[in-house]
Image 1 (cartoon, rainbow, N blue to C red):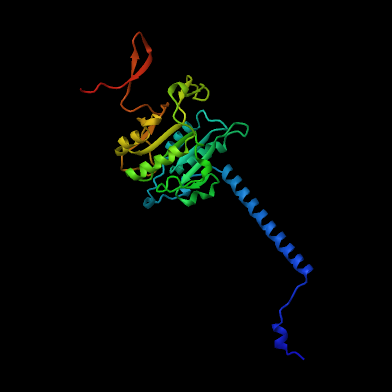
Image 2 (cartoon, one colour):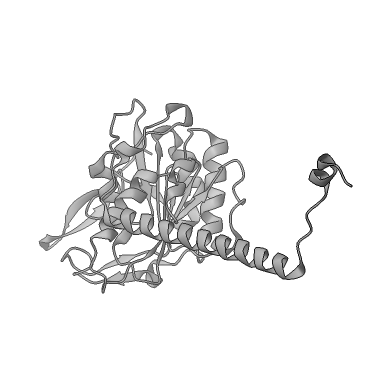
Length: 285
């Protein structure tokens, strides 16, 4: 007769039917857990889309060179990025999460029957991974991005995190990799109607549209890196929520009601004081 210890050591063997039933149970349990996780993710996404977000939720990390724009500046950038966009437009926000949050807030209040562009946020801070538009981005590896993003972007705003030639140059490489097409000539720029341009006369918008925000001392490098796209220094000075000691410039390849090219002034056209044209100030020879 076997001892009780020998009986305890005997391995329990299930029949094939029992094993099939057990495996079916585990498969059903895993499927329901996956379904529940997807429902929770969808619910969280709907909550994020319906609730106005604030950058106060994301504390600045100065060690990561994070300096959020003021709410006013972020909204101003968002409105001009959205100007003339359609459902086929893709907007990329590179290292400028405060503009991304402003864009989401504006689009969340847009009627469902109106077209909405696609957003892509390239960002190093994984806190923003709560958004489905988030793509992890490290400027030191400018092309380490999902391949499907290459050549898909119509409009981009970037605020490189560091005032260094290395950071600015590699960010520019990323921007050029993202952009959908080669720069258009002025004749091929998109005409935006008055209603889209804030009831102002129809205007031409270059394709692609580019906004670069960085320090004043990067001016020469920025205009060189983006020369093919017509990017120039504007007279708009972005404001930051907690201030910034460095002089900060906005560079773009289009003018708007918010900014004009820096160093140009409007003068009346001869014979019609109501018609203005911009000219560059004379320089000493």
